[in-house]
Amino acid sequence: MIELGVNIDHVATIRQARRTYEPDPVWAAVEAQLGGADGITVHLREDRRHIQDDDVRRLRELTHIKLNLEMAATAEMVGIACALKPEMAMLVPEGRHEITTEGGLDVVGAEAKLKEAVARLADAGIVTSVFIDADLPQVEAAARIGARVCEIHTGPYAHAFFERGRDAESAAVLAEVEKIRAAGKAIRELGMRFNAGHALNYFNVQPIARLPGIRELHIGHAIVSRAVFVGMREAVKEMKRLMREAAGQPA
Image 1: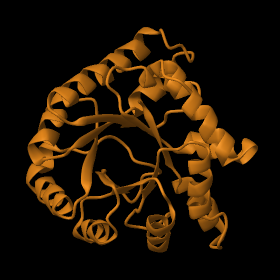
Image 2: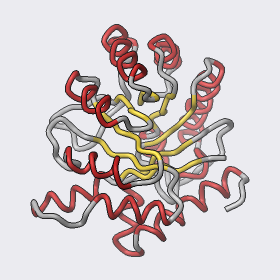
Image 3: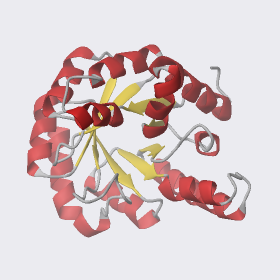
Image 4: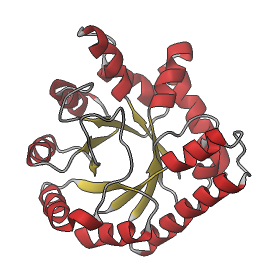
């Protein structure tokens, strides 16, 4: 059964714009759960531009569905994760000047460092995911460092979809879907879980949701944007319906 992890970072972005106490990301997480979310994702960035340490602590205490902590593979972040014990920690690349995550993690180029981080997280009982491009050497490296989950970066697919007339059958879009499908097949053959996310929205999600063996999609900006107009519960409900429909599963 395909699952939906809702990223609530940009609820905190709105709050931080005024450095105030609302909207509360924890409240957003509860509303997302009531709308059918299977998990909550937050990215505790090193510059704390949106989600704050206290948000993660409160989410750990107050939400009743899976918590996925996106994080850089630094000693500070690994320590925070080991103390809070989210159900999953997803290692992502992070740059101070980027607007959002740009590209997948280079597991091949940092195997020793990442293997150590994964081992520390595993010792704390935390499932570790890596956010990677749809690239077979990166998938193989993820298996070597002990990652249990690979989340494939769907940004290139989403950009192709937007730039090629929003046509799911265009050659450029089909080529990106095939890359993700091939990466997903390799992930599963290596005994890892196949997740995907980044820049997915209500118009482009279905070709990804219907890929064989895909377990979970992580979606944030599109859902928070829709929630501004219809509320978080309804926004989550709409997204999950589209995913389940594409996967041929009951809503």
